[in-house]
Length: 174
Image (cartoon, rainbow, N blue to C red; front, side, top):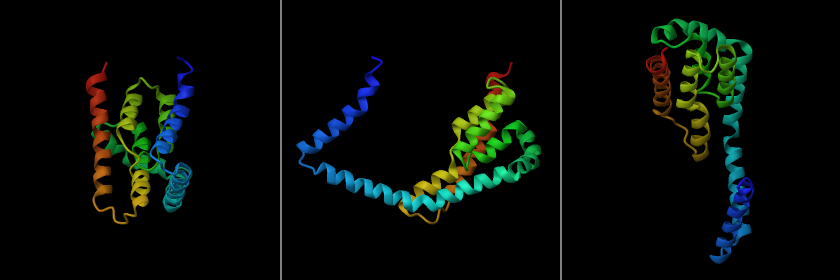
């Protein structure tokens, strides 16, 4: 049973190739065509991804994230969000890997079973990397005007931040 995982992917690939041969599909030509389309999609979304990576790097390196977190700390306190979770709330809509780094730092500083750790876990698991998803998915299909997508997604992220603190306080208070 331990070696089952080793055989699953090759078995699936073999089944796809056999299915293609049975249906008389030019398997290799179809594969090359799909790879070419994938490469073109990657090239088309590359500028958006580079911009997002640069923005996250600049926010972290300049100290702007910490400054913004400090500025928003009174609002966070008003909604019951721990001030230590503010950097996560700010970086999560922009970067998945950046928010994971912030989450790990929260775990190291406060522990995963602390109130702050639990709120951060709920926030991390319940929010989306809004700007990354919009840049990739909208960019892949050529949508230029996001209209209501960004405000709706950011409203959902804000709602999660508020409800994360409330939910953890209600269900995990000791």
